[in-house]
Image 1 (cartoon, rainbow, N blue to C red):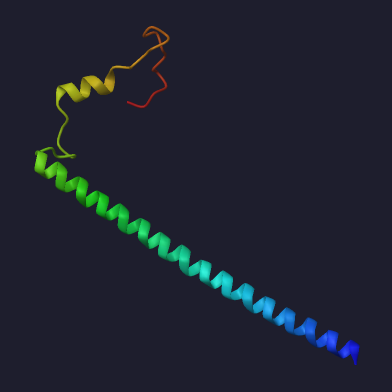
Image 2 (cartoon, rainbow, N blue to C red):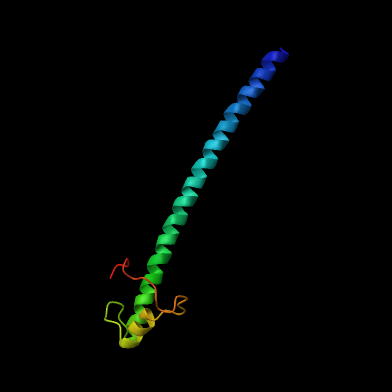
Length: 92
């Protein structure tokens, strides 16, 4: 009698444990999927707001940069080699 009771309790515990684990994994899947969609929506909203602010300021991201932007991009902040760096392996 005691043995049958223990077998029944352990069987019920195993079934409940597996069911709980499956429900937990399923809940995490839904949570991660909702989090991914939320991140995509945030990225789209940020891009739209950035485009609206660029449009309001009259600055177009695809327009050719002015000479000040080019000078800032090509001038290194600090060159430890004194300008003697080898640039032959860099892509133009």
